[in-house]
Length: 466
Image 1 (cartoon, rainbow, N blue to C red):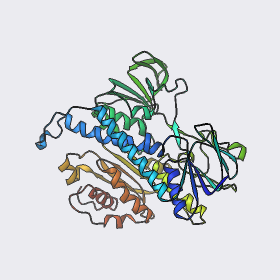
Image 2: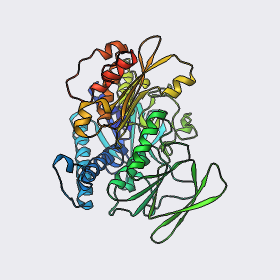
Image 3: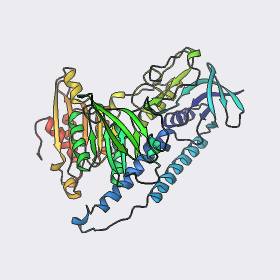
Image 4: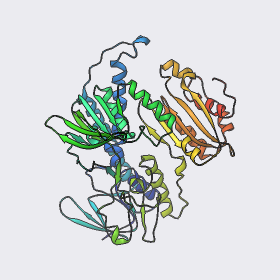
C-alpha cells in the first residue's frame, strides 16, 4: 500500500491546484485522474476551448462583416474551420502539458484510473488495464468536477443532441443550431456559432436570459444578441425532441399557452446546467451524503472528522474555475493547519460574449429584496474616449454601494474588456475600499477602466464625464 499525506481525486482546476499547493506546503501528494489526460472540464472541454473559439470567431466576424472598413482596413476572409479547431486543440494540449510539468516539478504522483473510497483514508484506484492499486492517505480531497445535465426525455447522442463539449468540436458550421438553455454556456456557444455563420435559436424557460444576472445586464445583453441575429425564445419549455437523419424537431410550450409548437434545426445543443460528478465514490458508506443535485453540501473546503475534503464543482456553490482554485488553496492550507479562507462574496463571474459581461457581489434586485439602503453609480461606455476610438461603446459600468458603510456591494460591467476590468473591483472589495477612495484612483488616458472611476464618482454624486 502506497501512503501519501494528501490524496486528491480529480486533476481539474480544483484537483491540480490542491495538489500543487499541498506539495508546496511540504506534503507528499498523489493525484488521481479518471480521464486520459489532466486539466478537467475547464482546460479540456470548457473554459479554455470555449474562450479560444470565442476569440477566433470574433476575429473572423470583425473581418468578414467589414466592420473595420471605416478604419481603412477592408478584407474578405475565408473560414477554415478545420484549422480553427486544430488551433484550439493544440492550445488545449499545450495547457495540459503545462499542468503535467507543474505536477512533476512539485513532486506530485499522478495516477490514472477510477477512484473508490474504500474507507476513511483508503482509496482504491481501478486502472484501464483492469488492475487496481490501493493508496492510503491522511487527508483525501474530492475534486471530481461536474458533467452536463441531459434532458429527461432525450439523452446525448453527440451527433444531433449535443452537450457543450460536442459543440466545441464540430467539423462543420450548422445551418441552424437550436440551444436549449440561455445561461452562460448557451449564450457563449451561441455567440461562437452565430459569428461563424449559423442561424441560432436560444430557448429559455425563464422570462429573461441568464436570469441570475442583474436585470440591467440581461436587458443589454439580450438586445445585443438580437442585433447580432440570434433568435431568443423566452418563457419557453422544450418538452420533446424527435431525431431525424439530418435534423431534429423540438417541441416547445410557452408559459402562457398550452399550445405546442415545433422548431426544426440541424442540431440541438442542451445547455440546461451541469451536475457534480460524485457518484461511484462510495461516499454513502462513509456517512457522507450528497444533496439532490449530487453536490457535497459543505460550502467550500470541509472536513468531517474523516479527513475528507471537497473543492470545486463537487462542492456546493457556483461552478467556476476561479472558485475551484480559491477552494483548492484554502483546502491545502487548512490541511496544513493554516487559516485558509474563501471569500465567496468577492468571486467574479464572467460571460465571454460580445459584449463581455462581468459581475461580482450583489445584484440590484437582491439588494432591493433584502431592504438594503444603497446607491447606484452608473457610467455608460458611450462616455469613454477609448471605447469611441475602438468603436465599441456598447455597454456600461454599474456600481452598487452600501449607503451605510460606503463599501462596494456589487459591480456589473457590460462591454469590451469587462473580464479584465472586474479585477479592479475585486481588489477594492477584498481591501474593503470605500467608494470615495475607489473614485480617487488615477487612471491613464484614454483607457476603458476610466469608466470604473466615473461610476464610483457617480455613486458619490460628482461624476465628471456624464
